[in-house]
Structure formats: structure tokens, C-alpha cells
Length: 175
Image (cartoon, rainbow, N blue to C red; front, side, top):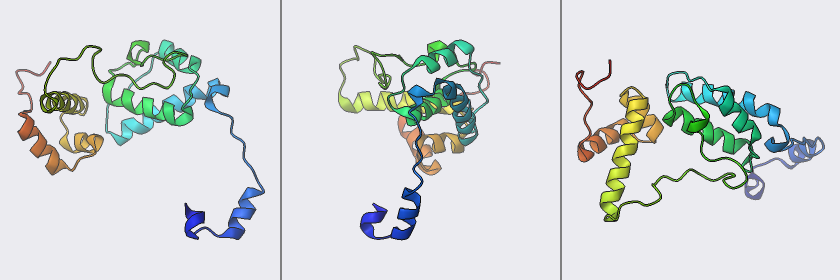
């Protein structure tokens, strides 16, 4: 788009075009999967202020065996989901279906046979469950949860009130 808008300098474009950089797709570099997965997990743990998570060898082997049709971006997105939703350690069971049949497919957000509800009620249930999951993962740190959810903290407070979500008291926390 920068070229179309006239913002990109033509002389710079021709200088860069002289040095093509070929980067093979991730499926041709299975040895990079392990390194990139650990890098992205570390990155998203810091970004979401989540507790560090280890990843089991079996999970790494499944990641290396995947064809990665979405390339590095697919792996990056998966790592962020794992930081938000998976427990420590991350196991092969925490991974979505990977392989030829499920290659690149997002895991379903609904069960195979969801209840027949009005859309408004279903949306509220899903929203509530997701927000509660993010809050638990963040240790009920509302600033971190709001960042993960892509919301302003004040809007998250309003959402919690509207959905009737309350921080569990000390008696209900495992300990």
C-alpha cells in the first residue's frame, strides 16, 4: 500500500529488490518449530503477564510433525492460545487437532451439539465463560485480563457487572 500511496521511495525499493531473501516455509524447517514455539511462548507469557509454562516433549514432537499451512503466523497464534488457555505443563492434549485433516483449522469454540438457545443468551454464556477463563489465567489481574481481551479496564469492570462475574472469595480459591 505504501507504494500505491507514493510514500515509499522508489530508489530504496530498487536497492532492496536487488537482494532477494528466500525464506523456506516452516514445513520445510521442522527443526525451527521447537525454537520458534519456545520463543513465542516466552513472548506471550511476558505480554500477558502469565506464569511461565513448560512444554512437554510429546507436544513439541506433535508441533514438529505438523505441516504448518499457515506458516510461522499459525504457530505464533497457537502459542498465544496456549499461553492463555493451557495449564502448566503444556501437553499434547492441550494442542488442537493437527495433521493433514485438521491442518490449519482453528479449534471449534462450541461443542459439536450446542444447546438451542436464543443468540443473545448463547453469546452471554460464551462471553462469560471466556472472560472467567482469562481472569483465572491472569490470577484475577484485571489490567492483564483487559489487555488479553483487548478491552479498556473500565469496560471490563462494566462487563463483569453486566455478566454478574465476581472475584471468588478466599474460601473458594484452591489453596
